[in-house]
Image 1 (cartoon, one colour):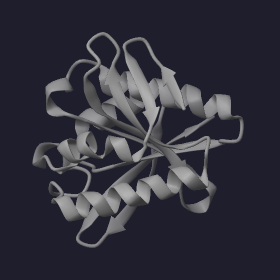
Image 2: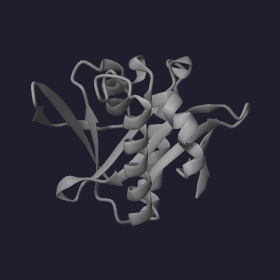
Image 3: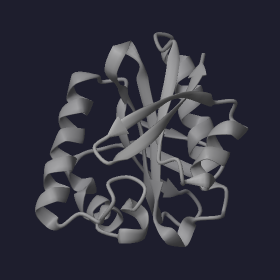
Amino acid sequence: MQFYSERLRYEKFTPNHFENYFRLVSQQDVMFHISGAGLDLEGAHRRFEISLRADRQQSDMGFVAVYEQARDLYVGLGKIVPFEDGFTEIGYALLPEFWGQGYASEITRRLIAYARDCGKVESLVALVAPENRASIHVLTKQQFRFFREVPEGDEVRHDYILDL
C-alpha cells in the first residue's frame, strides 16, 4: 500500500523499514512525549514487530513510513490502527530535522482523509502528553477536541477525538 499527500509519500511498514524506524525511535527528543525515552535496539525490535502484526491483522490500516517526495528522504512514521472501545487511533512521529515544517499537520490531514476513505472509521483518537503543546496544536487545527484524561502510572495522557 502506498499513497501520497502534497509533499509526502506513505508506504505501509515492511521489515525493510526497520532501519529508518530505529533511527527515529532511538532518539530521545523524538520519544520524550511518546514513551519517555529513546528505545534501544531490542525495544525497537519489539515495538516494530507489534506494528507489523497490527498491519497484518488490518490490511487497510496500520503503520506507514513517511518520505519526502522531492528528495526521497525518510521523515518519520504515521499510524492509523484499531484502538480500545472500538476507536481508531491516529498518530505520527518525525525526525527532529523535519520539525517545524508543517509535516505533522500534513500527515494528520492525510491520515484523516484516509480514514474517511476507508468508510468504516467513525472516530479517530490521538493520544497526547498534556505538555506536548505542538502536537495538541496540530490536532486542534484539524478539529480534534479534548476527549478525556487517562492515568498511566505516575503520568497522565490526554486523548483527543475527531468524529468523522
